[in-house]
Length: 182
Image 1 (cartoon, rainbow, N blue to C red):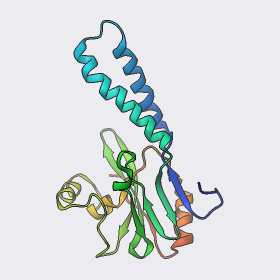
Image 2 (cartoon, helix red, strand yellow; image 1 turned 135 degrees about the horizontal axis):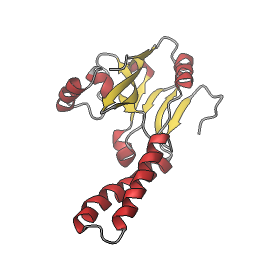
Image 3 (cartoon, helix red, strand yellow; image 1 turned 60 degrees about the horizontal axis):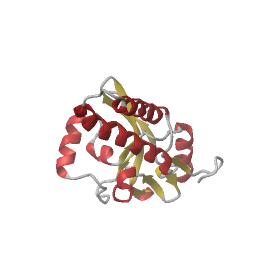
Image 4 (cartoon, rainbow, N blue to C red; image 1 turned 45 degrees about the vertical axis):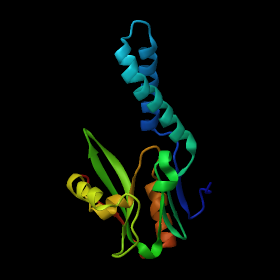
């Protein structure tokens, strides 16, 4: 765990408003599905979705895994808690040209993201294949390279001031850029 006065910025998966709401809603639906008189098809479809989904969200919130980290070595893009090792990526400062904050529309709301723009020729990151890039270019408002090098701010909290402070401390020439909301 990183001390609050340390220049290192670290955010870990935990309880946030959205995670708490999803877990509570999943618990309510699971209880309702277990009430007598519920149709069998509703239980067969609903219990795995809401029961297992809610339990997975509890796992994510209690995992304590690093979601995002800025330190003297660069930026750690924490992976999906279900496949953490396979989806976690470290980007060293020499490959970073900027830290980027952006939002993706999701229905009537937006999901905040934080990531990095990288220099031309930087090593590939997980999830950046040609098919994925084609889809990303079509559905996002930022370049695919930035999307691949970004993480959704869900299941953890982003402290923008501390993030900017850490980037300024460890990489004074690297800007923190904010894309306008789409």
